[in-house]
Image (cartoon, rainbow, N blue to C red; front, side, top):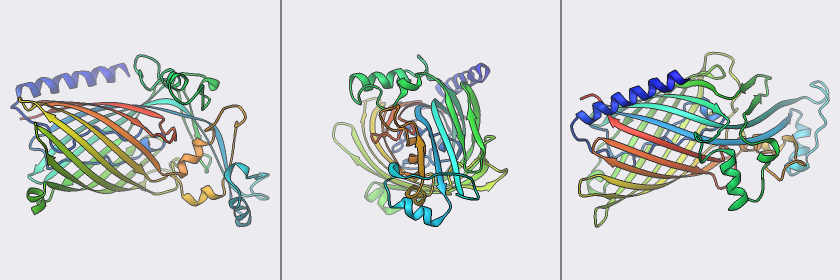
Length: 405
């Protein structure tokens, strides 16, 4: 692991040195935010699509390196999904926490069964190369990897258990509202058994290569580009997932639009909307762990960004992004599942490990970006505000530089 970090640092230094020798390049090209996909404990195994809110294809090849940290906490919970239709109908008449289902065996009371516990800070490392193919086309190549950690200081300053529980205790949320202190701070407890009996499990400092992604973007030229300052792009996405738990190919499409508004005193306002659809596990190379029986993941996003340019054309930008992602499991199962957990031992949220797999996930991203001719730095914080703990709180950092003359 230390060798991998050292190699990455050396590569970054080489790229920066190369960038400083190159000609000036203004990076501001629409809303060029970092990759702020969630470090979701299922999503990290698939080639989810990051929204592209650029105005046009870049003129130069650029390199991005992105680091994300997300704290996920789900106490152990079990789920029974009866196969008998009469039992399903009976359970669907009751609110989920009042349902009873006495499982005996598969012959007498046939049911699917799964359980999950996730307590970890999940880190994602993403290296990306954006290559202009023509005036209106761009190819993006990304390699993603993940590290499972306890989240101790100083490497998870804002996403550690201590930081989150300090916030709950002193600012909002109350004392240990979801049982982190009860189960223990700064630990890794990550295990999932799917409905087919396959097990996914991680220990502290487990590292894996998640996959390779190819993203092609087309930026058509319309009259509204010049007349209305509205820029549209379309994307096609191919992902190769390489982890031992999910070896497969994903395919997706996307559409995005950005409205640019020039303001006084060197200010610029950008408003964007985007949507994408991913067909995950289009091709499976093995009998994978079931990471959600909903084969399609759809995402919709909106972003508002305000930018202030300096006299030297450096800039500072702040953006707010709202993202919705479709559920991982089929919605109808939530009407009859039976959840079992230690509800007497913690204040609330013990069911989230299963229940959030059946909900649309929503989160807010707050991003600050500093740019100058040959360097762009961005920092973001992600919060769900509806406490789905998938993850609870996430932060990230991105560096972008030009490469190759």
